[in-house]
Image (tube, rainbow, N blue to C red; front, side, top):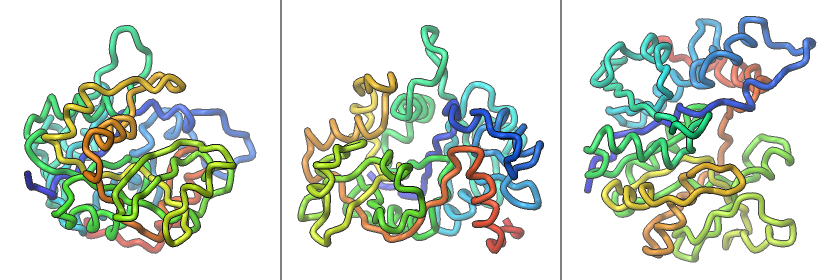
Length: 292
């Protein structure tokens, strides 16, 4: 069970919040508004050269040593292929091998069935993922080179996730309150993930250093072990989706101490709504990926 050089990127979501109406006095341009309404968030331009957040994410992954990328998209992935290669698999993009997996929507649904379903379908389409350890992340968060390296190099724990110090996340209190808090054992293994805990519960989630730890949906999984929990993932009733944290919680219930948490004190730029476009543009202005 080794690879650690493969990265699966979740880009098949419906981007509902991104497509919401924005006031006419917004500082984003008409073109940016149009992109936000019609493109996957991962492909919205965030720099003067029209490069999307996914370019920056792939750049950081390559710098961290990843070589093989699996991008999970919806069935309409024409624009993704315009950016990263026309073939379904084995496209070469700036030294990376790009493969596309499709998250098909069930006939009785209008939207994708969640992140656990997306990864499950990708592992069916690429069975090699059942035999290796690989990293999984969102397509609309700009994770750092450091975050990718930390997950790639923790060879003694094939299951891991980054636990971000909430104090370093540069979001509003309201937005941070929507993130999931992590309950962590003394040996740094994951005990639980709780979304939107009650106010009176929050202090119980502080780690031994008095910090609240947050998941920003970047994980490493042992494909051979985790596939079962994706295949048998229960539905989150409030969102009517199958979600990765649910599969992960089911796994650690059966295998306590199987998933290490890796603390990190840094911000993670996030492209959730149209208001985030200008924030990302400011963030990447001094990042030079012209050689990529």
